Image (cartoon, rainbow, N blue to C red):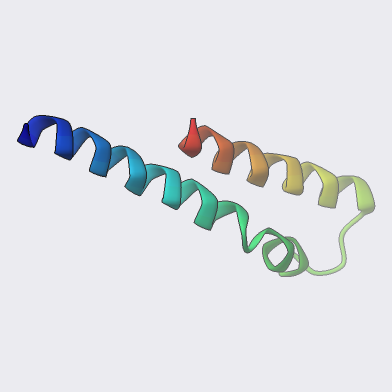
Amino acid sequence: MIRGVMIYAGSIIIILWGIAHILPMKSVVRSFGPISRESKRIITMEWIVEGLTLCF
């Protein structure tokens, strides 16, 4: 019983961590300052992939 609860609790924590990683994406990209549009896209894609990796 407790083992199942711990597995679900751990899963929920990691999913929430992934969502929390994705939410501040715009401010993180802006914090890099004046960079090219392509670099902004690369950072955005990397940030989203990291968040989704935590969720799945």
